[in-house]
Amino acid sequence: MPLERLRVENVRCLSSVELVLGARQNFVFGPNGAGKTSLLESMFMLGRGRSFRTRQTGRLLKKGTSRLSVFGEVREGQSVRRIGVAFSAGNLEVRIDGGNEQSLVELARTFPVHVIDPRAHDLIEAGPSERRRFLDAGVFHVEQAYLDAWRGFRRALGQRNAALKQGASGQLGIWDSVFLQSAEEVHAARERYVQALGAAFAGIGQRLLGRAVTLEYEAGWRRGERLEAALRDSRGRDLKHGFTQVGPHRADLGIRLGTSTARDTASRGQQKLIAAALVIAQVRTFAASSGYGGLLLVDDPAAELDPQALGLLRNELERVEAQLVMTAISEQALAPGLGHPVFHVEQGEIRAVL
Image (cartoon, rainbow, N blue to C red; front, side, top):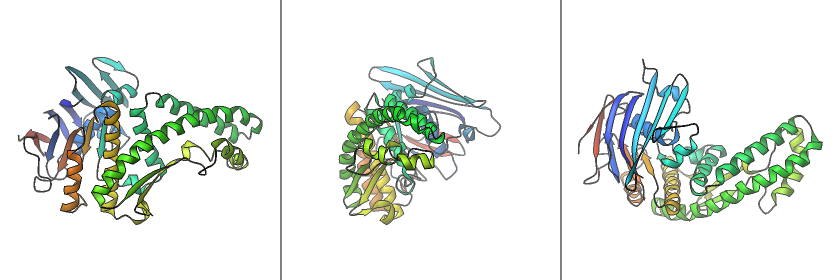
């Protein structure tokens, strides 16, 4: 499902941009602040309804304007799907094939998009919530029933926490049953996904870093213990603190470089490569289940990487079954592949070079 045409209006420094994209690889060059990342934000918004840099969409509005819009035509076999998002007066509008959508779920299913950006190392350095979001986004794309299970779990968690805050210990038996059922569904889906993701990640990471990398799902309670027992054992602490302390909402991804925790021992460049390996593994896992990985945005891959590491990353990106859009300051920093579209950005204006 490659993105064939893109139209952007009033996104940061981009006033009015129209592009025709290649199905495989696309290269965007220009100085810092010219609008390269703004272009990628627009593409990401077309699949997620938001930017990958901020969740406050109002910040994307070009100064002096009150409405932004992004429109795309996506090839799906012999047909073309038309997707549009617009933001004004604090409201987000989503249209798919001319119809209004109330939910972003169908948008994400219609146009899957992934990103490797200069902050990708947050997957390694940041807290567990960053990795849980990454994990849940991946499971969502490969297990159709996951979203309902996750929503059911969040409701059950909220109800149980409300009872804990009220000190209503007599009601916990009811909420424990609902919580356990939904939590087990979320846990099982995540475990299946991490098994597939970890297999892809290990090979990619080994090629990128020349060392073994491993991924482990940390469920959110003690290893080897059943959640029912963990929940029962934590009841006293839960009542004391007013919230549920064990369960999928406390889960994490354990990422190791060699025998050490990646967060503690990897350099910034290694962290970027590990994070890139995670994203590429996620795209490949999705492609294995659906036949195509969607759109992968790669913002300034040359940053913090030496030429050898960048070359290894380029080799991995060449193998991804997805459409690629990559940015850099210049062609010297990221040599474009022969025959692929090249665009140059200058002060918010974009022109096709090839």
